[in-house]
Length: 134
Image (cartoon, rainbow, N blue to C red; front, top):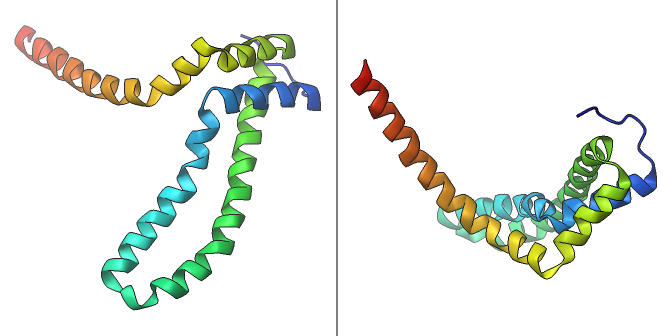
């Protein structure tokens, strides 16, 4: 579909509701804590004596990176707002706020994990079929 060019604050707000309601924002918000946990784990194994100092140093860095995460949410919202009219974005956001929408969003992580495994099996099966047909 054709991309809309102009995006105003109202469009962006409706699109942000979709990004937040759909669970996409949670994906971005989870990145900073994951990286911080990896750093903590690395230092706890290699330099346990500096963990306390490292935690103090991490706090302002995490706060700054969280601001960047919000920027990613806004960028995502802009992409939606450029492609979907505000009235439809509001309908989509309303779905995600509904009981059915919440069930959909809350099941996505598990479904995608299981689907990834299914896709690997599917891909391997197709590869075997192709090899057999050659």
